[in-house]
Amino acid sequence: MSGWWRCLDKPAHNLLAAGLLILCALPGHAEMPWSETGADGEPVLQLYFFRSLACPYCNAARPEVAAIVRQRPWLRLHDLEITEHPENVALYQTMAHDLGREAASVPALLFCGEMQLGWGEGASEHLAQRLDACHAR
Image (cartoon, rainbow, N blue to C red):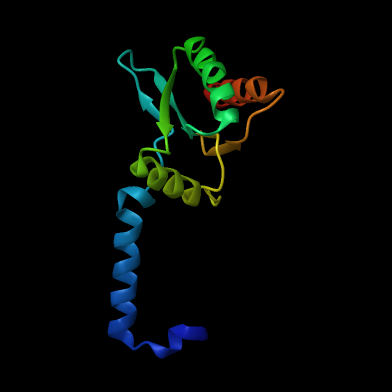
């Protein structure tokens, strides 16, 4: 063996391995449920929208994101405000980490294993296209 693992004896290896398995089983480290089964048996995609009250881009995005969701009955919006809800900050950090990304800015839209940051010209169309492509898979 090479690296820091050499420092550990067999019981320590087993303990470390068990700890890693437990961490992987925790809800924050499990695969995110990007879709759920709806009442009709069809998949319902989950769209997580992280936003701040003080963010003008978030405020601009919010009605456009809502319009996209209204046009797609197979889509469920999780509108998660982070300024007054630290639990939403923790969820954002966990979800971004699970995607190999950093929770560094808002607005952030997470769906189908993807993360879209920011909002501006063309963002609404891009989001709708990515959601439609995910739904078609």
